[in-house]
Length: 149
Image (cartoon, rainbow, N blue to C red):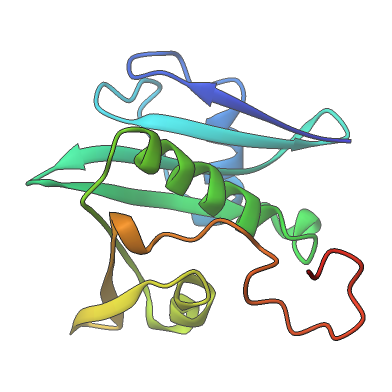
């Protein structure tokens, strides 16, 4: 079963979110995030993927989006990204930005993010809030999909 959970700014992340980040990104992370909302996705009651959203310099920012290696290939990263975008939409975001490694640019571009800057192997990407499309069927290429209208 897939489940999601939100952690509000200032909540303790050490028991559930931080193990995901450590498994994906390594390093140490603060136990509390005073500025960001953190999304956590569970698979079969085990933390499997996470990401965060916060407000900075006139835009919503996304970061620390990752999936534990043993849970990859199950669209959990896509789910985390959509949860974060939904949170931004619910706050009437005008612009959503993120910085990612260049080799993950395609993952974010599938949902409409466009590159705006490149530096040292990273790419800054953005999407206007009114361009966010969370309907996964809208751009579906499956000809015989029962959800296609």
